[in-house]
Length: 183
Length: 393
Image (cartoon, rainbow over all chains, first blue to last red; front, side, top):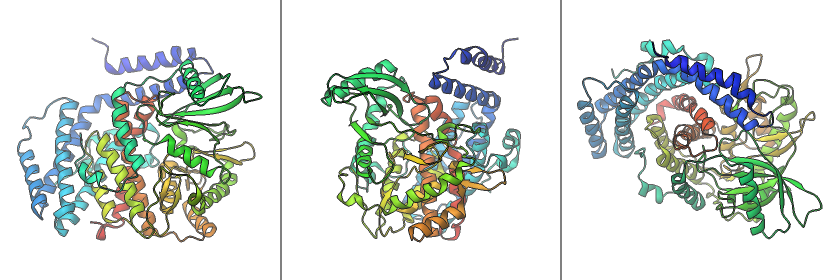
């Protein structure tokens, strides 16, 4: 058996805590602060690494659903129509078999996100009132789910004033509550 | 990667303070010089000596250079300066830009403003400024050293950048001063006679106050965008469509919060207001909305949310109105709450992350940590826009 990733992260943390941090001179507060941040990042990495693909896949699914939804409801002038066509074309060319690494699936999300951005901008130029209103609701609904996922992903950063309202990592990754639907 | 929000040509013709447009352009160029390595005490000593020679000082001795912790955007150092014009060494603070940070601001503007405010407000005294980094290597500002602390030394539960700090019993002592200084700042008329050539005053009774800020941050997002975020794009357009009229622009600090003032222990007396880098002329609601952000507050033991860890929201709002004689308009306050949350989302989700990716900051670890809070602001924007849903689009 080879050393696994959790082991190695925990070994890094232990070396920092028991050897490196005690060796930092008491008057070097910058080094002490940096070491504390390293420990914090390592703790979060240990919580995240095994779920990174599942998390990224969920983000892609949500962006895909938003793109699909907006392209279905788009109406208005030429710019809105063209942006909607671009999204539909992009949706039609998504791979049947998704790539299996975090970065490659993130690249797909980025491509969809750019197309969504174009449609939002177009809607504010010549989208119909009905479409703009529906688009706002859709983006808010998508954001409600996706921002909850992102906040949960980083809940250990101690920066979220409403951390107690967030689900567990397991619930965020596996519950339908955190999947945006185009329906 | 561009965010596909507003085209660059649209941006160039939009309302942006000329100095800030230059600063963002300069950032683009400087970002290519990385990666950035934190400066050593020896390097700072040499840089300061170059600067003071250029300023015409003689018999210069720099000693006791010590890095200050905290600060997600500037490298800060304490040092002692002795020269032929001083009877004894004096303590100063160097505030210097890394190649990139969570916000890009201007040391020259900051120096102009601190000089204008001196004598009227508790601000650090300016010694000199190196606006382009000709001597220091990076743009920097030197101010007098001010005594005090930014958080109680005896309390636990402190966090990075002062965010999440708790003031304990000091809250009762600090809160009235915090309000008084804010009210005085918004009433300050000294700008009319001050030398502030790198600031623009938005037109009265127009939407310029809001649009200057929307354009500045939209351009920041366009430059620093790491990946598209639909909520950020949608919010930009919402902000343009709903920009409120500002009757009487005033000076706003725009980072007036926990961690950005110093006080003495045990008196609780505020000695200095820090970090004026985001200050500009705008709508007073912008400051209030910034102060009210959840990220800067804490929950007390009774489960009440305290604005900046100091006082309850309703009390803050009613006291501000009572002391200032101003009427806080709920819809304008909400607009600026959206704008500020959007600004913070841009700082976290673009500027912080891209600086960390390019290793262009002295605290890459810290800004990456702060960048992970971006979704907190997206959630806040969503909640605010839902309050207006029937008329929001």
